Image (cartoon, rainbow, N blue to C red; front, side, top):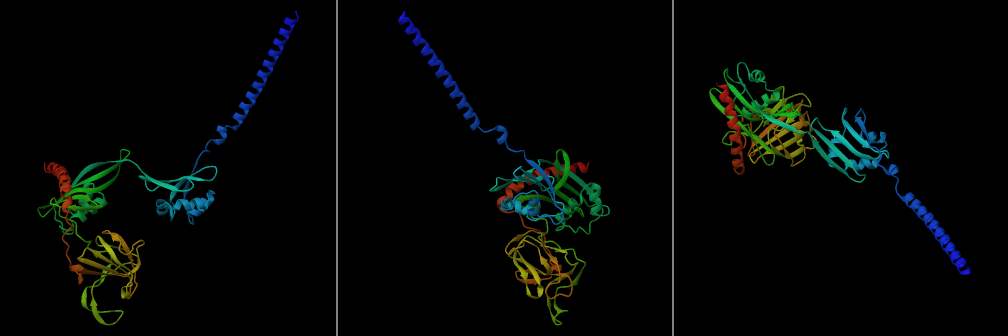
Length: 412
């Protein structure tokens, strides 16, 4: 009896101990789970705050610094942004009415800046707080080749308008053939055909592009021109045999009122009151009139040049050199030894140096010898380099075939 009691007693004690230990382990497990739970991040608290877009339209007196200050974005972030070349180029100097968008979080940190440069291109600037990355997104555009033709009855402008050509395309057509045809002496019955690119955005007509191929019949003679581009961005118009058809230089470097001084070796100087050579042409024009480079060349001088005042000298190949004098100011970013394109603005009409009124003094040199610009004749531009002739012939054959096909339909 005593053994049975002892055995039962021990069994009770073991069961009780097991229950106590089990309960203790449960408490420890629950407590440990609570601790683990408390150390895990709260998903609601750590979620990224919603980004907010702010539309900005530049008003009078606005600078990027003032705009950032209004949105409580730090000056340090502005400095980081402007270290990016694209940001500095497009937003370093603001203009009235310019619009862009700021993406700012609740901590007043700039995350992104969006700037629609035009209806096709948008600049994106992404900031991580230390650097700024830029990218430009372009809307996808499609193109189509369009053919238009016209017959001269009164003038090229009237015929081109009747054919449906824009002012830009008409000017381009005139420029292409101005080196081979006197566009001021067209005859009734002269006719043209133009093949050009038309650009479409979201399926709708957006704008016309460049003329791809053109034909102009003057006095019964047919003149043809084809557009071709080769590295580096050398675009021009050529005959089917690859010779440049556009004139090497512009006829004039600016829109002027009258010629106030001609080229002569014996001229009475109104400032010095002596007779001496006047080796250029004086184009009288309104103060501030833009002056254009007559061709593709390189700046070999810019700055003050004695009696010429503010002047620019450009070398056009080894053969030609031109001087532009009496400028009110030289175009910004026009530096020594930089290249300029035909038609690029290089300065503005003024009266600096020895001058009695606003005008451009223009000199032209051939192998260092002064020539009268009004008597010089330039037949055509450069021919296509031999290394690109095969590519030109392949492209021109396609363009000529399409142009000829359309013109054959015109004659039916």
